[in-house]
Length: 241
Ligand code: 5GP
View 1 (cartoon, rainbow, N blue to C red):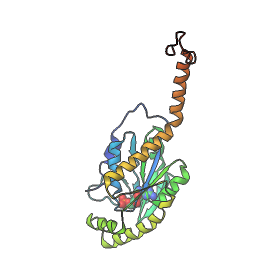
View 2 (view 1 turned 30 degrees about the vertical axis):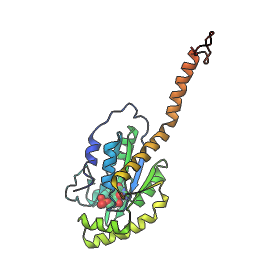
View 3 (view 1 turned 135 degrees about the vertical axis):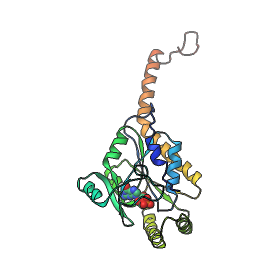
View 4 (view 1 turned 180 degrees about the vertical axis):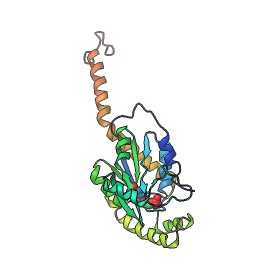
């Protein structure tokens, strides 16, 4: 089963929330292939409203169960090159022989509508997003161990032994990049990892909302405090009016 299924479906489901306003947050998630990132992201998307998945463009062919416009936009190499030349990508990279890119239009469209975005990109992509969108939040998902990752790659049965070897080699290099990220989550048990990821997203939302919440609270205080003559006590010593 393709773990990314459902992410695209979720994107299509519009959520109209009164709390959704201003510019959305950008969460950049990287993980070595086989870490279980897709299942994790799906769980978090189901649990948190106003979160959207940024659908990348790729020159890779779709795997069984992957759908155009849900998992990726699958495009030929020449179309990808045209997009590169027209400057349509916020970032793009070559990963294990294929090219992958995040379109500027996807990010600008969804964040300006106030949606918080999850970007599933490799470590090269994360570095570029961080340079271009300084406010982005970088989260690295670690496999519990080398052996677990090796077994997961074999049992999911998607890749040839040669590709598995190359994925394990890239995993090693990617993990070395993890220290650049703001957060690291070990995906040993997906339920726990999902709780941690949700907690990070909720905490970052609270941080983003701080100024707005304080401004609203101050406005209310001013109004009530004014009406209440600064909390003057009643002449008979009762509660403030
Ligand atoms: P897969 O082919 O297994 O779906 O993805 C391979 C790698 O490409 C993963 O590490 C994934 O995070 C990365 N990737 C997917 N989309 C993008 C993208 O838009 N930009 C970059 N830089 N990497 C991506």
